[in-house]
Length: 111
Image (cartoon, rainbow, N blue to C red; front, side):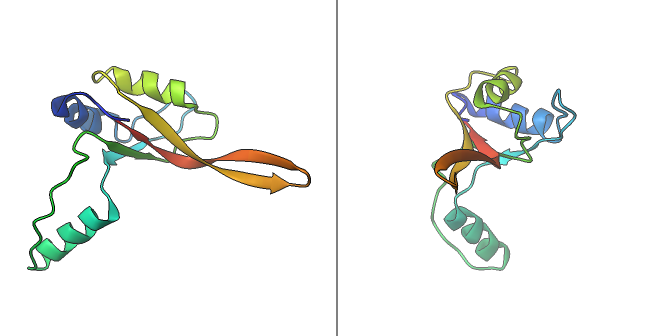
């Protein structure tokens, strides 16, 4: 999910993290960070420097999304915090017999 304004994303993280969905499930919401950004932060905390700036300031990572929640439901939950540009719940294709299914992976992105 990508918010148009960084203040909306910050407000959403503060209020939506640990939000109980209609189905009783609790969400985890944080700023999306690439692995390289997480690594850079860890290095800085340990006294090493890097000049890499985040390009995803308004992107949020959401985990513990129940399989009954779809992208439209997730978008509606987050739009109360501001305009949402996109929502993506991660799925994977699974082959069972001669049929292929998309399986909800329980996490996604809001920006």
